[in-house]
Length: 302
Image 1 (cartoon, rainbow, N blue to C red):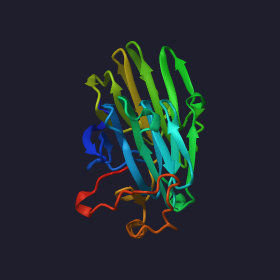
Image 2 (cartoon, rainbow, N blue to C red):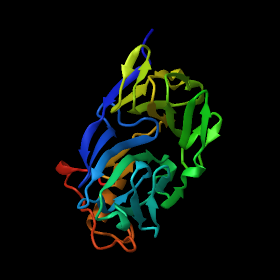
Image 3 (cartoon, rainbow, N blue to C red):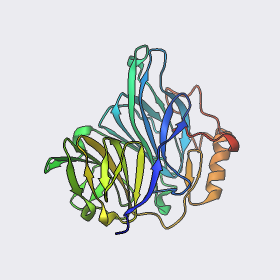
Image 4 (cartoon, one colour):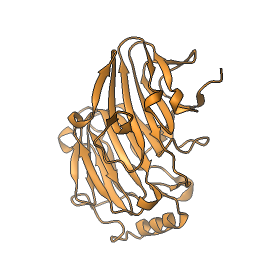
């Protein structure tokens, strides 16, 4: 039988400023999985009392960002006027549309002490007709995220929808982001609930797919979502994500995404010139900003 695992991507280190992350997407051989364009695995990291997460104000266009923490806290501020602490299990969902600016920092009350940080930061593309929509922001409490158990397997639908469940996160296209946890070996067949393209990331433990073992820090891309069946080898935490891919190609430069390259060029000029109509300042965090990177030194600042 031909394997349903079409591609295995190893997590690779990436620098987002004063913090290292494990980058899963984009990858040279696979630029997106469904509408998912960019996935960073942050940590796990211990930040000493003299270290803090400080990603100054930086722009986005043409995408939604999803932040989901396992440990630690991040304080989010944006040019829409939102300011909120992100805690483990909550979902921060910001749709950039035609343009938004935000910053991500260690909360003030945690500065000066050892802290831990661990989680995902994800970019999800917008349908072509929404790429230039008005920006928006939603914060969803962890108790609002659908969670259930079936035959000893714990599920959580962080965002999107599957056959019989829907998350309150206001996504813009058919997609899903699912957490699966097991405490003992389990056989899981979830393919009849999925659609489009699907990727699997094993956070802890290992899984067996068609007789082969796969461990953490690996991203598997399935050839056929409807054939998504696997075994967990005891205590395992993994994530399934994907959905319907877009028909049009998405172009990326730094924090900008769009199906039209000319829109990226305009965004670059607007940020370089600090055009406050395109990219307003962030209330209470307007003293600094991340400069537009040179083409040969592009780093993601999310």
